[in-house]
Image (tube, rainbow, N blue to C red; front, side, top):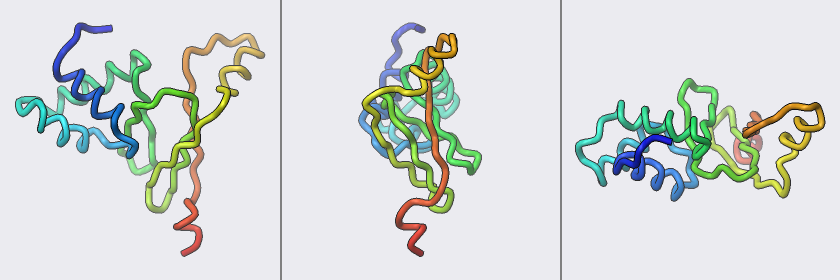
Length: 124
């Protein structure tokens, strides 16, 4: 892991406190309140480092914008293709890692995303 920085800590804290899976732009808006001198590029670099270190997860909603999740516990992301909402479904067991090891694979992480329509959009 890279050295501690106030910027990285701010990005991490915002993600860990958020349940909304914010975009880099939204994270930038929030971090700027804490570290006014931060640049969007610095936010992107810190997001990449945090993701590389397994501290956060990146979620694609299908519109070209990555969203970020500070919750790295085993869970599934349900992504609505219509309204782009993301719902977390927590798991008792990370079945993907268990499944992978059954095939001799040595996983270090897993991310699950299911795309479709949320209940609200499917009722329209």
